[in-house]
Amino acid sequence: MKIVVFSPKHEFTKEQIMRLEKLGEVVFTKSRQRYSLMALIKMAKGADILATDPDNVGGFEKGKETLKKVMDTLPSLKGLCLST
Image (cartoon, rainbow, N blue to C red; front, top):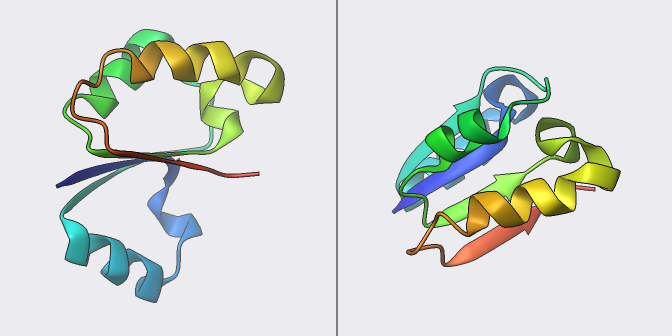
């Protein structure tokens, strides 16, 4: 299982990271910066679970549309986790 987290790894506790890693491969963004749609799609490729922070997808206002476009490229997506 591949889990893609649109948040940096350093924002998670060691325990949280270990729990995620028990589920499979985990990919984190390097920072909280806003990423382009193409960069997000590239990072998310093959994801089974997508966890996202609004900052990486353009904030609450623009993030919904960006996130929808990313999700449309993930045919095996099984779950979505949204941060508030």
